[in-house]
Length: 258
Image (cartoon, rainbow, N blue to C red; front, side, top):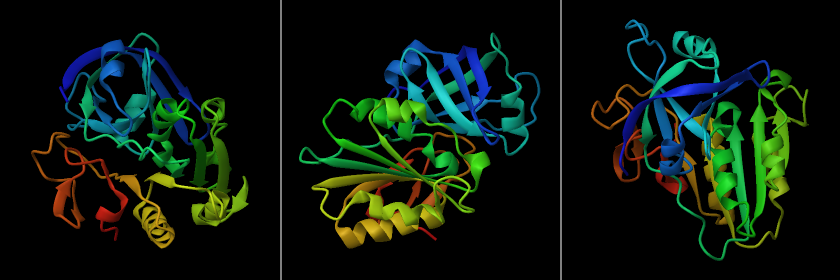
């Protein structure tokens, strides 16, 4: 897919909950090109060289505007959180290999996300909401500060179930405690997952045991975002592959989680 770089005007930059933010920028041409599972590479410092590398962000939503969902964890995202309405952001994208669509006979689509891994799931639900699937989101967070209302998912007809490590919201435990929400006889299903590797390894094991196919959107530190530096390589059944170019989306049974 053609890749584009441009400067876009910030429309909204807001905190959704203590840990997570949403940034919206005016990029209709980029929105038109973006598919679920792809990401954008954003330069967070417009004047200097610190931080030197761009930061990758999964596209949270792409309609008339493009939205990203992020957490402030270092200098790059801290600078991003300071962006105000009317500021410009330097964006390269869309990048990466998107999710594939579920097989035609699929009845239930299960999205399983841990923390910031929920980022690529809203744009996915936007695409799938009118295709007569039963849509299910299983979300795991550390505590109440990592949970937000998820109204957009519910508006798309997604059944949302939440687990937190301390039980402050939803069920107590890791997202795996929600696997029984999938049901014993849901019909042909397909799973999408994104989050920490141990979580996705648990999803992989569960899906394999149930014979459910799916895909994983992998997360790695990315320098170039174009597959040139090989710094984001991960091990797969087909050898080492770059997350930024060959992924981020891989068949669930292809990735060797550690």
